[in-house]
Length: 223
Ligand code: C5J
Image (cartoon, rainbow, N blue to C red; front, side, top):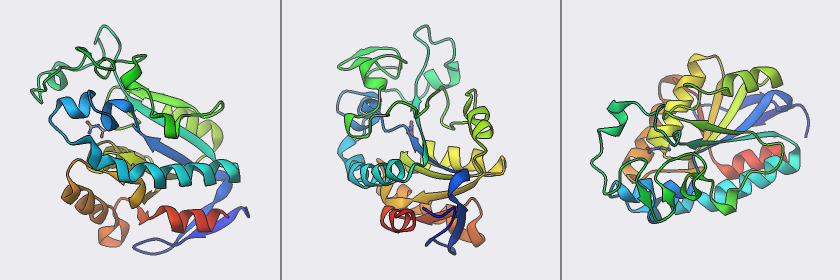
């Protein structure tokens, strides 16, 4: 694609420089999307997240075909839980705690099958995978270092869940000076009303945190 592109979006179209834009896919992990993982252990219906998979897959394919820099994140903790704050561990009252043995290995622990990314969106060689102990992808990770080294200034941020890890990451990125666009159909929440309001919050007030678009409009701009 041409270096200077315009993505149709709200609250207004977003001009991007292709060379300094990356696709950041947040936490499309088995632990959130499949039965028996962290999300299900908290009492959520994981099927509510499934409509985001196909649009995410189409966007990922288009980004790869265009040669865009792609990164993936995974929420997870060290096996000894030393990077898990007690305040995180004590909340939620799940059926299985973080670190407990579940159907896909230990819940939300780095290196376990459940903590890995779903096969439909599996990272390819050359696509950094950022393991993160928090909800935001910048906290206690090398994400900013990697983005700076590539000269990235704009981020297409998608994944799950809209109002938790996607939102936290967009807020962190916005404060660090990154221009963020969120394709709403490539995100999902266990609470559909939170998904809707989270997207409205990003684009309200003239785009207080960023832009909102969808996979179709972003793919159209890339092709
Ligand atoms: C949550 C996430 N919802 N990836 N994590 O706990 O959004």
